Length: 461
Ligand SMILES: NC(=O)c1ccc[n+]([C@@H]2O[C@H](COP(=O)([O-])OP(=O)(O)OC[C@H]3O[C@@H](n4cnc5c(N)ncnc54)[C@H](O)[C@@H]3O)[C@@H](O)[C@H]2O)c1
Ligand SMILES: N[C@@H](CC=O)C(=O)O
Image 1 (cartoon, rainbow, N blue to C red):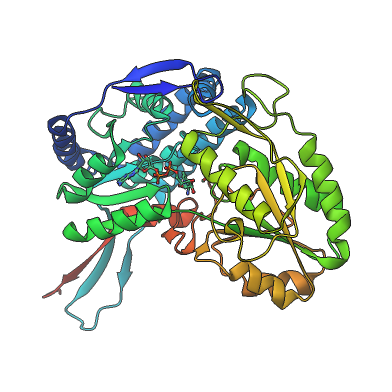
Image 2: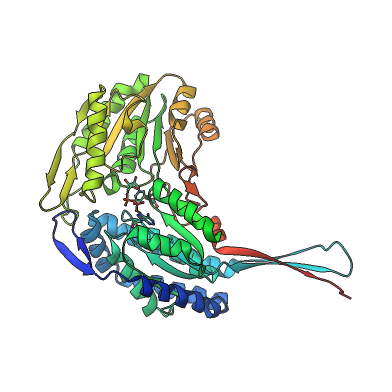
């Protein structure tokens, strides 16, 4: 049994049954069998079913958002926004379902014809994290179902309820039970069952880089197609000419959303030395004004940290930075109750940070903003690229030459130029280097669910 608790209060919300190994294997078999029928239904019918699903979700938006806030802790307004964000993936891929085109290619002989078709890969297994329990699920399920694949998901143990609700609604919308399924239980155990299974033809994962690497390695046993959306360590560069007030607003949005527990959160702020004091003062004032508390309370700006492990990681990064000489401009304050299991971190701004501090090397996943200064642009680029990660990067400038230079030189999959919130169903989301493989969203996001089949017809008239 998995206990699902509210990270803001420690209260038990629900107990969820863990699936046994036999049950999981049976579900994988059912998913594989259902592929035969689901993949042969015409694309317009699949598109209509996806539209039914999104309409039903929107009718239950408030209920789903409340469940999400209870199990994840994020602000209710952020949960409501996430339901819309999750639905936008279903809507986008309901439209892409009817635009999966093949090609004909001029043959090399008069007696031949060549046809290239795009076909669904088969049963898709997904493993998702707790930080976006609705959107990370639909970003995978919607393109999979649109392409004609069947789908099975293991949500994070911390937040299974949102996923279970969305899948119940998919069935209510008319999508057959074996076409979209969930299993609950331990990540490592279910991960092994997914990677070992020959029924699963594709694995899609969002979560930490170490787990992603393990899944890539284990998927080699059955040569599975994989998509990996892993960790980030986003730099945010503020150039000398930037509109400081605008940059501060966007940095707050990027950094403190979901209490800093977002893979594309700004993790290091790199500010030109001429505006360092002005920027630091303004961002400190903005961060210090944020209210920390329960996401169900209207005035809250920053909710709880998901669990003790996340809390300890954030605290140790702040301590390491302070020990190595960082100046605390605000924060470095906590409200933790071990007995209840509730952990809050007050928005923290650190100045005088250095490259050798852990916070400048690793993903924080918390509301902490370290600032480092630069003089020349190539120095800012070197600092930004000095990481094994390559998910998102941001910069603020109104000088097109600075902007295009930064765009050309930053090694990241997602770039926000004067934009702290670049995500969307219509764009390809994903990272370079150890931040992942493949893209989700946009026209690119359906590609990983399709195989290319080539037909050569000979002896033609
Ligand atoms: N890219 C993202 O959106 C994202 C999301 C969540 C966490 N993270 C990163 O990961 C860190 C730790 O968070 P976490 O512990 O929730 O992430 P995690 O990678 O451990 O968990 C994500 C998902 O993977 C599952 N999982 C765990 N171990 C597994 C295994 N061996 N095989 C298969 N599945 C497994 C979990 O049950 C969960 O569903 C965070 O601090 C953050 O840096 C990134
Ligand atoms: N925050 C991401 C998801 C991963 O954390 C998004 O914007 O989609």
